[in-house]
Image: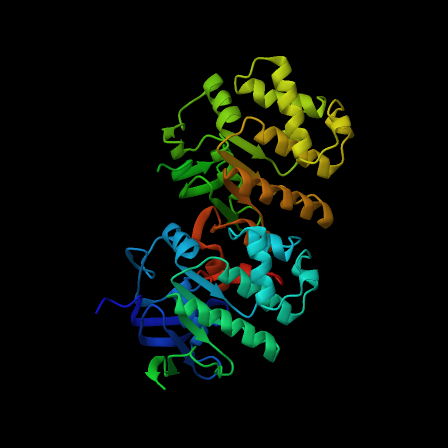
Length: 226
Length: 252
């Protein structure tokens, strides 16, 4: 059997708050995880247990203290903890996408232009936004006035616009109505079937047939089979 | 691939003994945007001054497109500045000759870069003038009659007219009101995406940095105290000063 797409080994992450007496909070203490292409793993655990930190360490929007996060994709093998910043930027362009519950985009640019900016033709961008449930009359507007749910639809569209071997989802569907949520999950399932690995945090474990393959629980900074 | 701009252990001490910056090193590659953040007096503009060849480091090296330019002086230095490096300064007084027209300011960079045909210089300068969303009928008007936002647009046209591979922006919108600021930043972002020049941008506005920069250098008392990907610096700052800087801003 070939090596997994993602291998996390001995991952430790703490936050040192220098403005509060240098207090250090250890959230991950030796996390281990393997993720195969074309599978979906959901991470569960109470608030503050380190679910988001795990995803952010993989995306490198947070710095791990120690451990390894080995990504094997597109013929390459790279430790995301040790990789240079420029390597990480390349990884984000081609290999790893992340959607959180918050949208951060350049202001004053329309939803459609933002999705086109990910390399999609106009028609494909429109189709993607529509499939995620964003009304066509909103496509030409910048998301400044969008609701929380509409922002999440755009955020998912931006993440799905480029096919990438690994998707990280941190509560990325939390504000969607049930119908939109099903639309989003259907798009994710389609990606998974095309070979994308998904590592996700969901507020409520989605009851969506075929999507979730495995659930792991964060307990005392480690990942356990749930 | 060699970097468009490399600084190697650049230290600059001003004649009165003040430390401008100490041991600053980084590589900036084509198509990449690096931001420098830090409080006033932390050395941000000194670093830009060394990169723009306006300042000469006390020690260390400045390398532009693979060539060590630290020791280059005189006409070659001026030529290099016009050809390879566009700079937009914080105040238009630093970057523009107010007695010249908008067109004259833009043309001066091109002439400095070796353009000779008057007709072609004028044609290209006008094209840049218009591309910066300045009204064509103001092309032959002295910049002293321009508003603050328009002057910064003229600076941009002047900086980009010889199509340099490197653009330096030193707080380009700090003196403008927010609506003008937003339009200038939109323009800068669009131009950088279209033309893929390397960009070094100084700002103390972290929201601007999140919008523009791939990577950040955090400066404190003349030194780079932290560096990293923009979202990591803003979301998981490590150094005490960076934590203070990030926590001090409401929107980041």
